[in-house]
Length: 112
Length: 111
Image (cartoon, rainbow over all chains, first blue to last red; front, side, top):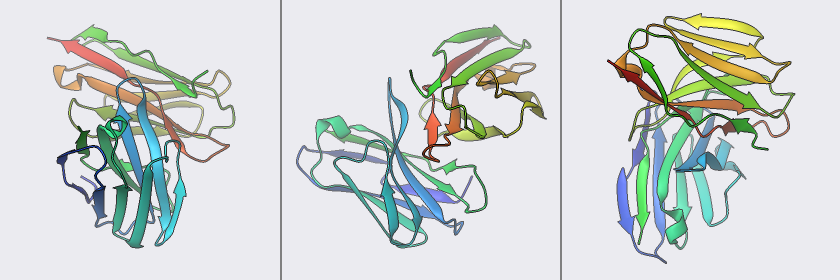
């Protein structure tokens, strides 16, 4: 496995509460990504980072924010969770010189 | 038109047969193509990458790319029940540089 961990692995929360998901890597890779995976939509990019404090939006960024204060950590925050954000969230990493992305184990989030 | 299209399946093949998974993409300028395998409840695992027209072989897997037809495929020889999974095609688009995924094809290999 690529050295990627995600926490928590499972979370159930209520509508309107803030939620933060963490992605941690031990590979010292420059690029980190957050995706969500939903039936009928496949994997969709939420936000990505191309360096410490350097982030940009993906295809489905509304309702999400990210932060990267250290190379190894990339945080995804749902400021006020909604039921439409119930999904499986995957983090991915990529070395700056390569094109391949490697995925973490995922976080299953349920918003009631 | 979706940027990356795959038949959702399920594709059912007998053990030992060749499984053929197909993917088409809309961005003619795309240069990088990937196949991921995803077991139920698990994360996507990269199994093949291909960047040039033609075939690329790795063990029982062969990726085929035809940029003129905007078509990429994955062949799995001597299919095993352990190959039963969803296979995701992914393409880096030239306009955004982002990795775009198809919805995946479910493969069932029957003993």
